[in-house]
Image (cartoon, rainbow, N blue to C red; front, side, top):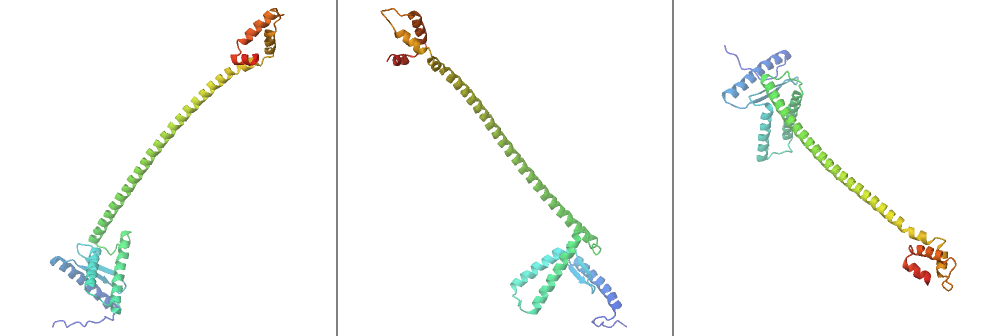
Length: 250
């Protein structure tokens, strides 16, 4: 006698329910693998147990790619077919989708940091390793790019500082040269002014008046002490300018 039709209803016995779940889950995963191999189909299977444990299957491509494709397809359908967002059923379906997506993202985040890897098989671990290697390559490439840009900026700043230092050194040398020339000119002017002060000192001599009087006192061609006074007046006249002699004569 063949087996009768199994009545589809919740199994009340907890142990029988767990055994049935394990058997049916294995058969479902097997069927998903068979259809993906035989029909070259892209299959993604997600199963949650009553305790919240996740069981999934994805063929050669990763589950994230299948979910992203599903999201794009569902979004395109929603754009073509207007739905009534005011109905509670649509919101419930949208909430379930978002919740499933959030759980997948949280699980992937744990996998990326090396946590909760017990549920992954060999192929999934290889895909995860490939993703991490690719991410590390991008990170190293970006880091090297930033380092090169920083080095280039520092070199440019160094060249600018060197040029500024050269300009300042040139200005300092020019200033020192100007100061040296100014000191030389001041010294020359001081020597010239010192030489011009000799004449007034000679003119201020107390014997100038006596010499002038002795040269102008004449009595019939004979002056007492005239020869010596004339000689002294002549000696003093050699250092007196003509305009001063005219002034004294006047």
